[in-house]
Image 1 (tube, one colour):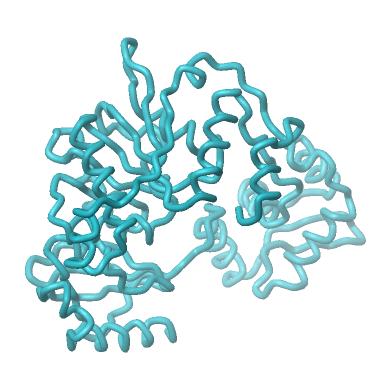
Image 2: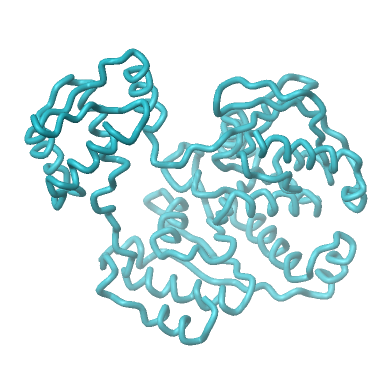
Length: 382
């Protein structure tokens, strides 16, 4: 939110675009906004660790809140921010903090969840991976690092705390500048008024429709166009689907795709399951590999050569972040890829790494960093 006009429009809002919720739990939530101001001590620390004083002040406030609040989840908006925040905590020597997001290996996530539940970790830095009902034990307090940008997201995240009859959810938003602060204040005011963002249901998503038609052909090999149309129209998102739109999707599946996912005989009004061996194999492969609406990305499994332990999963477009959980175990760690890439599956690759420790001030001069960049360039080309 940049201009004062945009901020004003957000503060006023449009109630017609909101779901109005009358909930005593939301009204009783303790939500606040903090914009930390750096102290002289923060400025001295910032010089020694090469950070801005404002960033050190925010880290200090988070540490103080965690120390005085019990088990805490620190929510951030992106995985890269989670990595960066974790690295900065490590760099400042703050322990008893873990990290949890969807790009980490299953082993790492489970280890963090158990440590948090057993009280070995006072806080966990997380993205939306901990928004829902994962059993991680009781949460006393929630910190939202920077504005969550949505009322419903803040309510969901702060609602993770205080799950007892004698407790109420408590949380605070840590902001970085004026616009961030104004947005967070507006979000809290709207949350307390019960003004949540309206639920948006996608209208006639064709990609989902293709997947559902494939599933129907796996159940029965022959359908008439009228049978398909009557069945699909029962689903709410497709209540306004026209017969011509359905025919267009079937033409795409039959005539455009190679191999085809369906065989559409338009003049007879019949849809058939593909008869070729290759086409059927591709149809089943498509169905089981496209069951999620999240776009598929290549993954690189990072394995510690010393003990063959899977450390984390890197996405195809992810870079070597200094906040990586692989790097957070010791100050200023850098890891270098030095073995040939071996393909496991079409979307999975394996990287063997070794960990090398440097002082944080010398990380940029590490010979392993340029090697890692070269390897990342090779991976992106593949």
